[in-house]
Image (cartoon, rainbow, N blue to C red; front, side):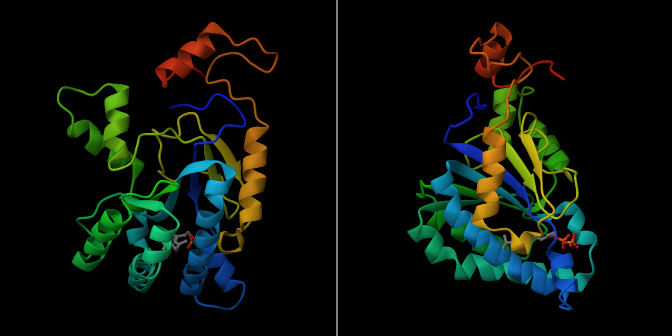
Length: 253
Ligand code: FPP
């Protein structure tokens, strides 16, 4: 599942959509306006991604730590998720996007949990893009839950499958974080083991298809070694081949 060539399609891109609050406050608007504007940015990226070789897009919409935010902001975000799942369902089907939610559902309202299940069912046949919405998501909790669900203890492949849930397991190729911070914030820690990281100061509501193209251009110029040696001289190493074959290198700095 790991990527081994630069100009490949079928990429898994993950995005930490940060900066909504700052975008709003610098405009003198309530923070929730930034989240609302973030939906428009998400729409633009979802529309552009398949044409740029992206097969899977995982976006961090609400971390399990975001419950610590003021109740009014949490409620506004939950409202927005419901709004998106209703308003964007038909466009997602028409664009052949398969929507999958990752994260806990037992702490979501019944209404939101039902909308998620409905959206997953209605979009299940989408083939152009798998859009994974991380809601009430913690990668550490997801890994613990996946291990606990497997008997006997899982292989790497079994764990990856368990973590993928309703989507095909795919290591993250490129992880983008907007908003200027440079951290992973408990997002896809297992899946991003060999992800290329791309940080931009652009605030999420200002992120456009052009910014995605820039990030992908940067990604495609990188030399991905997966713990082996450089293949840019046209001499793939045995260890690099092994790493690609096993999808999960045993030891590599
Ligand atoms: C981080 O920005 C963003 C979030 C916690 C929410 C992300 C949600 C959206 C983009 C809304 C649309 C999503 C869906 C799936 C409908 P922040 O609030 O931490 O920004 P700050 O760092 O500037 O305060």
